[in-house]
Image (cartoon, rainbow, N blue to C red; front, side, top):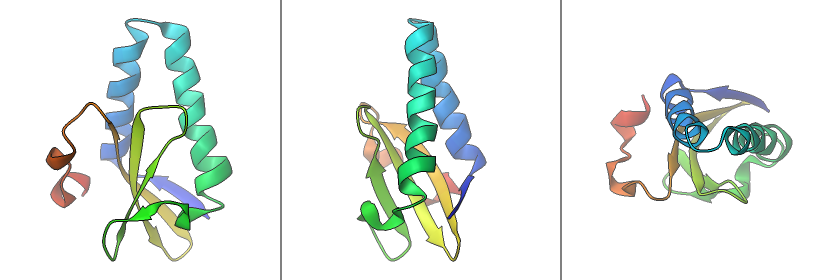
Length: 99
């Protein structure tokens, strides 16, 4: 399955990595690798392994992190809509936010 990151998802991931990098650069690099490895090696192969939120949107926690992905499965594409940290307000993540 082809993985595509929405611009908003990449911005949110970079925000998380920047926050961590200011405190621990090595941990930031490990987290970045973990996210992309998980997406490429697991989620792209098993897109239905997440929890379906509604008819289009899926949710999947990244193991070993406090990050959550919201994504859509579109034919042969897996579109990562947003990435957020569990310390963030889940209610602030809206469908309009992912466009």
